[in-house]
Length: 580
Image 1 (cartoon, one colour):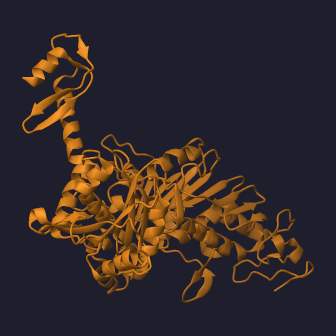
Image 2 (spheres, rainbow, N blue to C red; image 1 turned 60 degrees about the vertical axis):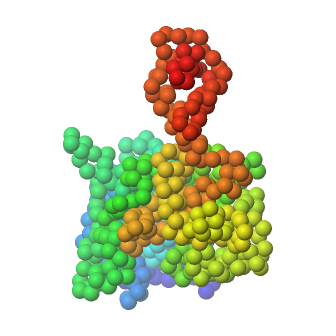
Image 3 (cartoon, helix red, strand yellow; image 1 turned 30 degrees about the horizontal axis):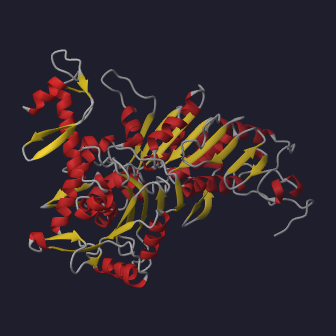
């Protein structure tokens, strides 16, 4: 619908106080619901009083003027639940808020309402909206803009910019969306920082270290962190724990609020909701996502001390929502791809991990993870990723029918020559697998022996610092990869598709093919480094009895059937002592 500048803008209805009438020439870019900047509108005494009430009380503003879309009732004034009112009051009263909130409990709605209130009734404030995914931050902005369009003109600030990622008001306040990268808001003077689903932000530690100074430098800046829990690790968990008094009664300054499923009336008042949802999600996942439990599975393959020390790396590039580039391709480095095939039915994931095997510690260079891609299309993604990393070798798991479909397309139709083939290992009487050999076929079946060897190697590689895990999805899966009976697998309601690429990779690196191809024997390397550390521990100052004549010649020291090399800095006296 087009309007002439002399036409009147549609009246705002459904509010307790009648609104002003504006000409279309007084609206921003002829958008009927937005007042343009620098428009002199005379307010009635009643409107002035209402403006004052809204400006001083966010809850009053929300309950009388903030509209939301209801599935059953359409676009209506927001009637917040008790816990949502408490959040609004806490946001208004406290500088630093951290909210641990269950899924589908209206946290986006209540935060969007508060941010709009803050922008309208405070001058020269810059509000930054960030989330683990850009579309999540854009959703917050969309809700703010939708409510603004139907807000009475007498409560609006004139708009000077109205974009999908940024709005500017005539009072000098700005609302903008940013990416959760280390330098996204560096150097800006942020008045209010909002981060949604903070527990799911890749590179959360580095991001927080670069972002926090933007609000810490000012005495009036505020911060709101919201998230569903995601295990006992990461910055959100650490900040949540730090919000409670320690032994000395000190906190990190954040005011914590927890919203569980039984705080949400539609869930709490439905007698069948909990049982039905538990059956669908499983107890572990329900307790974390709906009960706000910082789940930490017992009996994990990787000890909790190592899991707690892991931190995710910021994503260097994200070609799409399924692909993470942690380390861009370098032609001087060497890579291997490992793929696990899912059914494409929104259950198990298809995961492909590209490993950088140039040097220790081995690292994850890139990862693809999707639970909707067809196993017939997945091979195209495999080749695309391998091609981007120098046509690297690729190992594909082929245990089930979908794995068989994928390997058929990859090897027999697309003819990817760098596909790794495996055969029965004759040296073990056919009980194991090997790379290559007589009758070798593309892909690998994850037998119990392959799984056990891979799991054992994976634990040792991580504990000895030979494999660095800094991808968030993989770290999370490791936290729920537990011993179930006689084998390690995902805890109930969890996934292990990322972990299985690690398991297969750690089986692969012990194969003769890998040793020959990359000229690196991880077992010998770990033994050598362990022996060198043992000697260093025995000789903390590098010598014995004050001997000062050191040789820089390498020496071989026998230890049973093995030998190790002792390099420079070993005195002649020490050489004689070790060889005897």
